[in-house]
Image (cartoon, rainbow, N blue to C red; front, side, top):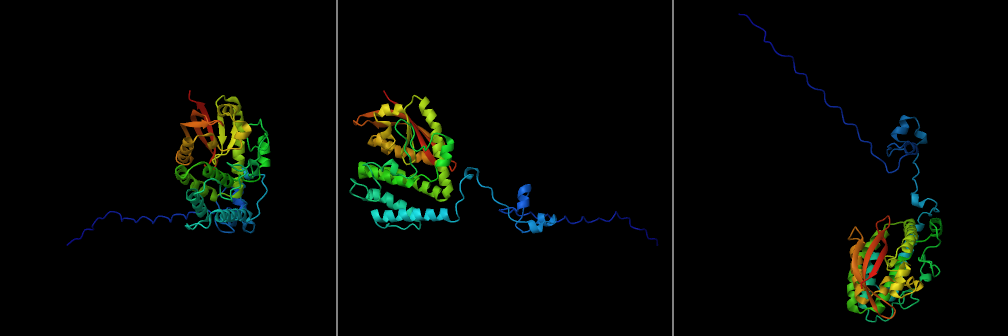
Length: 354
């Protein structure tokens, strides 16, 4: 009995296991000095792996953060000073509200929210609308004197702008060292509205304000003191450019802040409203409108402030002359935003409807 070998194929070789995936180097928020100069990814270790590999472990220290371009040239703010200044401002505002209105009825867990609720509620809750609360710094029946508002420096009559320290960009960048007092302007706006309107019209205005004012507060709460100074520099620099536009345009044009305070006006608008340039630069834009247009303006602004990314709308407003005569106009409103996407300037072009 013979046996024959069974022919088999070559033995199946098992494939080697795949090499382990290299560990991803975890990026760090701040690179060491050497990695920063070489523009290479660093890690959290000190010394980092790259410096250890190059035998430079004893020289591995955190690199210095670069200062933002728009902050270059500004004096360094001592640690904690900006936070302290912000807290002091909030405390002063809260004390002012409690002195003029009493303690808030509702606690939202935020001093800014409580302040906002107290202000808007006070507009509707006070029966006496003939005089503003005593914490509003009023030098005239409609608003505080522009010279009393910090950061606002009026030009002599004949200039088209209010708030520009000098006539060149260099002057703007070197002269402006404080933020603009928007809270003061808003308080003056409320005082004027309460002295002019009845409760029913105030209700419509407050509804519009409640749509955008909390958003303004929320966006500015996260900004540093230097950011607020930079915002004012942006406003004044933009204002400087619009001087040329206003002087070349034959259309009645006026520029105002988000609080409604007029900042620049062309001579054509002065002719249209029969008001002097000096008078207009100390007023709110709504002081040039009839009652119906004022309510309409706040409604339109609440839509443009954050709701409409285009920031432009065409509508109609009734402008008033000192005599009380109403001039019906077609108006184009355009919102200019700063680098933080916050509305900083409104440009209004008005044409009379004949």
